[in-house]
Length: 389
Image (cartoon, rainbow, N blue to C red; front, side, top):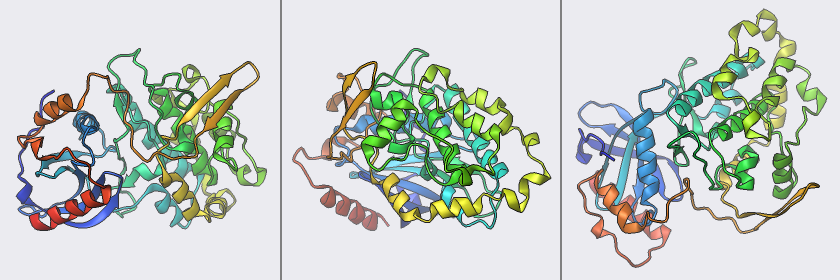
């Protein structure tokens, strides 16, 4: 696997405020000193990633394949490393997350939701043509490039994405975000491109009413609903302004059997995503979805906390499968580690470090063998960045 073409040195960037933070990385605003252009830089702590170098290789390889290939997919411009950190230089999106933008609008119509879904399906169709499964399609991973009204919507965060080498490849790792996960991911029966289409179905449902289709009082209820494909367009008062065409679109995505789900290209041909589907009556006050959306979105912080709490690497165990039901037991302990795809046993640490050297001239021998807390490593990341600046 060939390395990225390095055209910029680390000293040519000056990092600024923190934009976001995860379990092993911090995203910062950065300025290219010579050009004055601003970027988002993902600062990845090497010590936190020791033994998981394949994850970074995977993300870089995927971003290389898709960068600048589609107007609605985030671009990787450069990467470099210091003794302690790896840096991925990407688009700086200042327009905020998808739902935040919707929430702050004065009016919101079904045609607006269809425009968003059309954009997402177009980007996912491009990914699938490149044999890439995103595996974490959700609103938080959709950002507007700028604050202007016509700013492009970008799909971001390819940390869980996976390259499928051929049409019969299947992935087995349970990963993603709880409410958006497809049945085959939870059941660990093998999954591929159709999982993204299930997630688009969930996203579409949410865009039209403000809540997800498989909500349960407890996580096990939500899991059972997903496995059974158990959802309804209820309460009726939340759906009276939503067309039957939109509901049909959702039905053809939230299909338990992945082989019967619409593909991204088929979804783009569905009547609901055709601009001619909507006319002047579509933007009548009676068809404004904003009151319903906001009334269900008033628990916004609670919802965001639930969605952001974990990537669904909870240990889902299928305890039995009978003709009557599938019984699920979920460990109460939540594992916050990010899991990316199935990794061959041969991908041990030494092999991964050798592979990563192909991307950089810096030796990874500076990483100590003894353990270090995440808090210590993050403090070291901050100190290193301060010193570099």
